[in-house]
Image (cartoon, rainbow, N blue to C red; front, top):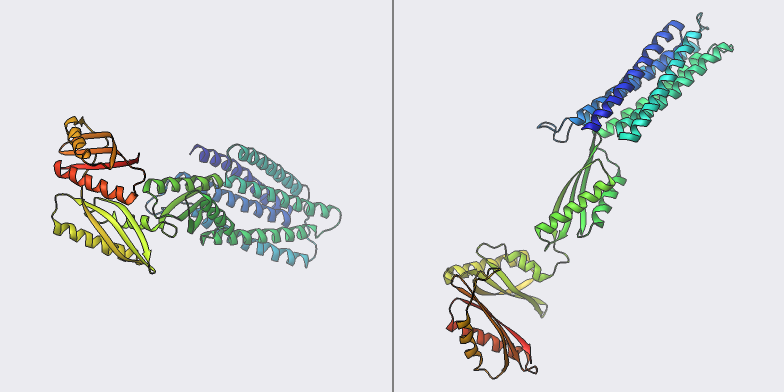
Length: 452
């Protein structure tokens, strides 16, 4: 906010200086009958109007957005520039007409003299003063409004030099030099006002540079984790550029990851466009995501599903089939669990139509905490007795039996003959797990087979 206040002070000084030049040139121009000087005073008035608009825009930038101006008040700058441009264009047309008319008339009885030159020199001094203070301020605090006023001060210096040149020509006997200079300045004013009208009119239509949009798209696409960026909506309001960007992320990206990627995109764009206000939207893209991941994402969002695991797909005769294990509340009955499985199958069919058939294995859901409380050595001895009955087990490793509430978490390390097939080992471990589970109720049992 302090920067905006400092900019406003500099623009106030510039406004007072150029307005004083307008008053001096207008009065001395009327006294000395110098059309060129009067025309240049109107140019100074144009600079005053532009500076007022820039000052207003700078002050309005301090005011935060409100209920009626959610994007802020930056458009006031464009509206003021449009009105000022139209007014100056009409004045410029009048001076062009007056210059042509006087060129066709007899030489005037009163010719511009010393008064006109004094006024011109005063204006040149004012222009140099403005250029110096604006240039120094731009280096210290920057800002588009200060740069715009600097350019207008530079053009005002040039137009004053043209006006003085016309007055000097009169002293060498070229009586129409003043009118020719006025004609040139009138044309310059017309061109500048038309450019101002055109630019501000485009600003009011929310025009934005295609190159700027292209740069933003390239920055977003080059950010790690972004698959694509489209659409990109941008508009300018005063000094602020608003960007509304939609990025595509892999469908299996977590919300936390998506938020982190969005922040990276926003920061990368702000490194390029410091005055940007950015809104990022993200949407899932399943194009390059594995089919198993798609299934997992669909199923875990079904009401009643507590967990999903062992998701697998396979193809045969050009058709895709799916197998998965779905865990539901262990307290519900078979009918309720079956209804959940039907909904799961329906959701998979709706979202992934290429899957021909889905096989669902229902399991009771048991919560396993990250930390366990008490070791149960008695249970471990019972498990060893069961394991010792199987000659295929060459060695019994660690048996970790940890209890929490009314549930046991049991992890067993066993070594089997290394020549046994994985299918045989799987069948055997499943059988042992089932036998242990019949002896120990409410147990979560996992056997970890190792080669001997």
